[in-house]
Every structure is written in C-alpha cells, then in structure tokens.
Length: 119
Image (tube, rainbow, N blue to C red):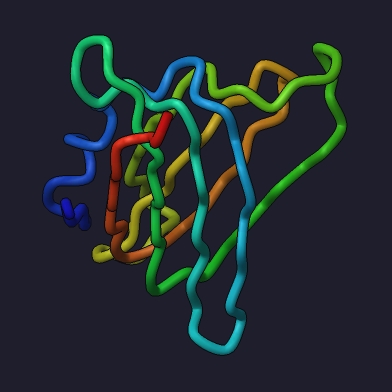
C-alpha cells in the first residue's frame, strides 16, 4: 500500500500506468470516496498487477464518455497537479484514456493497493 497526498502527489506521476485497462469506477457520495480499478499495470518489469486507487476527501469527479479519439478504455497517462483553484490539501488526478476522454478527480488523498494478477 502506498499513500499519496498534497505533499507527495507528484510521486504518483512516476508510476507506470500506460496501457493499463480501466476497470470499474465506484463512487461513495456519502463517504466522499472514489475507487478506480486498473488491470494489467506493470509495477515491476514484466509483471502485471491489479491496482486499486482509492481517492478520499473527493470534492470533484468528472468522467466523460465522449470518445473523441474513438472507442477505448486503456490508460495513456496518469498525472497529478495542484493549482490555485484548489484548497491547499487538495490535488487533481487526471487519467487520460486512449479514447481521448480524461477522467478528473479532486481529492485530498489517494491510496494505491496492488496485487499480482493470477494466471
């Protein structure tokens, strides 16, 4: 388990999510929580993992399904940023898909859990 927050969120950018398959996105409005499931993430060279990203303290979630580049649900990139519009403890995570859609989540914390994919 790894934990990311406003002071170390850029470390999440350094993880390799390219070509990971987007699974479910589960939202708990009551708990201000969003869980994003990614499949076939390369955590270690030549290994594939299932990854669960749990966003806490969520205040914004934008999940377009417009597919401007055509159909697809694979990750092109995952980036994080803090900007002047957000509270000090918040940061934005952007997940760009090969469909051209960009999922945006504003939260105070992200917990990453991974497990080896069973064959």
